[in-house]
Image (cartoon, rainbow, N blue to C red):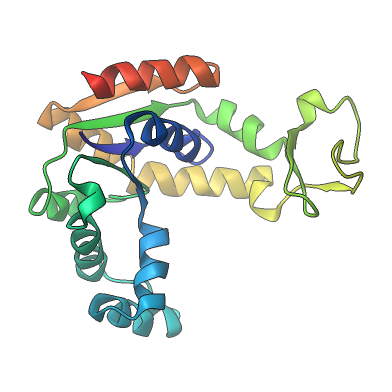
Length: 207
């Protein structure tokens, strides 16, 4: 089963993708991870990508596609995989169609106001990595696990979250229409509790 996960920042794609991968025993493929791996291992496409990264430029679609093609050809992908964070644009989706058959596209649908509250209310402990939400902290500012002070990351500020959502709507949201027309899009309510979302995704993925 070859699956794509779509959804805005904070929708929980990474968490749910990992749970589904564990349940189905298939790999979760993040383009960020495979890009870093290809550069570290200095594969031919990894070396190409490295030139752009070191120059502070965006890695072109054709290089990303080559890296994805290399990854999907590996043995652990032969029974299926989940693509998390790719494609990000319609041109990338069109290029992906030339190298892979996607069975299901899962779109985690969450309203902007829910995401802004979810992300801007997040507090993290830099010492141990624990994550909290202000709604459940009751004014507490220290980590319950290690006692260190909790902080709000810069990219979790309401203004930054709104900017990230705007970029998503402009660049990535058109993929929803693209896959809807292809007939393999499944929309899941991402505002539900985590276990309900997981069961809903598992149902549509198993088909």
